[in-house]
Image (tube, rainbow, N blue to C red):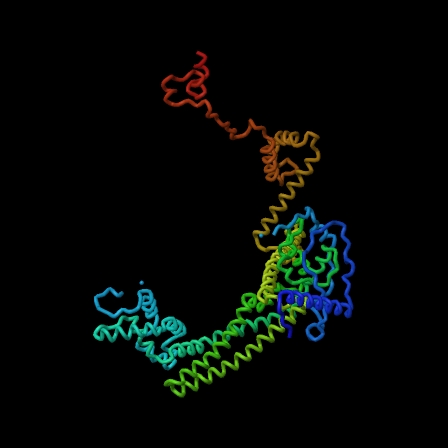
Length: 576
């Protein structure tokens, strides 16, 4: 064992150890096959934005003693083909690189002995309001009666334990004034001081009531961490995402790396393309949905990782150590209590409890150590370098994975909604501009017996339809003989023939269609009449600009022109 005697020797040994470490590392590197980074797998024509991840090389590490180091997650990933021209267009760098800048006794009607100061007395009186009657507290503490006192009550009494000085002052005041009663706070402290080994009893009782809860707070997070590692290791969707992100990053960076640190996942939603300002996560999610339709939202499959992200595992280890210290102290408390009066059955019960706790704590420590070692092996499997795995914070690692999975689920839902909207739009475009009868629901392939209604009303409608067809055919035949003047020439001839049709209906060759001809003639007449022949002349809007008040008009009288305009005098009267 080396002993450093001065600062210079300390510095010297540090330099020696550092040089020895570098030499051993170099020798290990020379003895192992080197894996070249290779040439970039893609050739870019435009400058694109870069992904500032940290490359890891798990294939170069020598960890043959670890069973989980024989294969890595990255070695199982299949290469993904990406649309390089689309990525080059979306993530084209359009701006210059800027330098990054880092950022309160009683009211006194009754005389009492008051020894304690007002602050201490008030605190005890307030605590007594949540405790059972003082006469039952002593019996409950001696018998460890959990029905009389709960955990909160024990913790409250632990803050009220009287000191030797307080006990002595209260006893002296009571001897000096035997006829005057003690105050409530003083009487309570005197009662507590009569209990032998009060502090040991309360602490032992508190440990007994706390143990189940504290053990659960330690064991459940460890179980969640173990389950979470299994979930990530066998999750296919995570592999799809990492493969796609690796392919995109290799193209954008112009490299051919085999893996990257998972800490980069928290930056993926922040990277955006330069065209549509969509996040890199959006494009990754779109590719995963298109190439792997059986992929999931990831977040719903890693619930244990989400729960582990809320646990401080350093505090958990401290809680486990504190459990061991409290268990050892409880054995000392039980020995101190056993020196005074204590029921044999109660002593045996507490001894068995503490023995069981000690065994369970030992097992819990072994489980904790094994799960932490397994987590370190899991980090090697995920591609973390061996020298950095002990520096990885479990809470932070799980939080990065959980938050990324939540972002991915939200983005995936949005991508699926957009995909469904586009599909609905394409479906609507297929029937745009077509008659409703051309669609599948209203196609003419249905049986004719269902499309032909029966009954008297239908027969009448059919007959009327045939009459209208005959009228239209007759009109079209007569229209062919008209001149180039068009409708107006034909309407004049029609007006000329009205009288002859009315006078000699029996002599007309179209006597059977005279009702229909009359209808058609009225239609033509209403369409070709001039505005002067309209039955209801169009009324012109009167201007309100030169309107005069009624009072002024009656006062000054009307001019002949105004009277004529109002129709009060005729034209002949105006001339006279």
